Image (cartoon, rainbow, N blue to C red; front, side, top):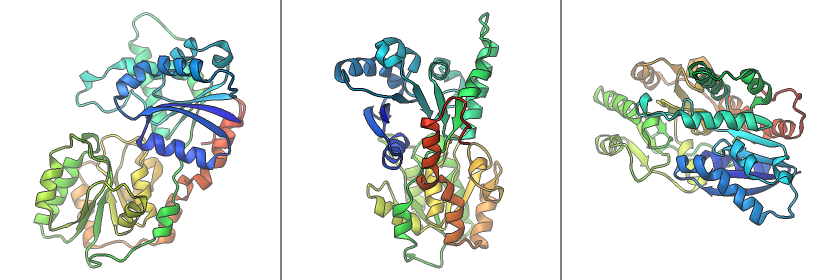
Length: 366
């Protein structure tokens, strides 16, 4: 099967997902992409941009399907394409949805992006969300929009969306993490805490580092590995943490090398998330695979992905992290592999095959 893939935000988790899909699902994926920047402009204009590229560059090329990310306005795209293309099945994958995408203040939220997500689903033949949490918050956002819509009632919308949507976790390739294994610790007597998330406000680094400041002031022993993607403008708390916790830090900063990244994860004992926003959680999954105990908020996508014993309640991070540092629980490689195996491409590739090739009435993968 030859599938045309349209991704206007080809970077980060979107790129990792498509690269994994291309490597593990046996179809001919032909990619049209744009770099991962200016997401609002991508959502507004990717449809006419890709329509133009398809008409000018894809003449005479036969496809059996079009596969889009949710940054493509599928309704607009189909209206701009010639009949030979717009009559093909259009499948859309949601890494996130704009109804619950984080904003600094709720009154800043532009519901037009959520409405674009809605018409994209209605114009797609099949849709997959990366977690049940993503799907549930999308459906809740649609219900809210339909309730506040002044005088236009859309009958059967919720049933339509539910019938055509599935949940498919994005696969993770664990080969390098498994190969690196657990390396020798720099200080094997001290528990090593890992932060491997984007350096942005929605990951709530201020709460994470202030908790570590308090633990350090109370005399608790630990070491720290700080990873994750850093942008030109980063939260000021990272600079403060580098200064105040420099005696604890093993590594601080983004690493390009996948082997180096896997090696640093393998030195960790605990991976912590303080995220205010998370539709999936690939960085946590990778760290757990490398041998870390997860300590995660009891909300967002995390309760769906990990057992309750690894979740903490609001305001309880200091207490839970102190307990782990004082009495480190035992977790072996077999346990961390068992916790993460169903996120691997080895386990998920068959579910994608079913989704791509099944009829509209086929059982949903999850």
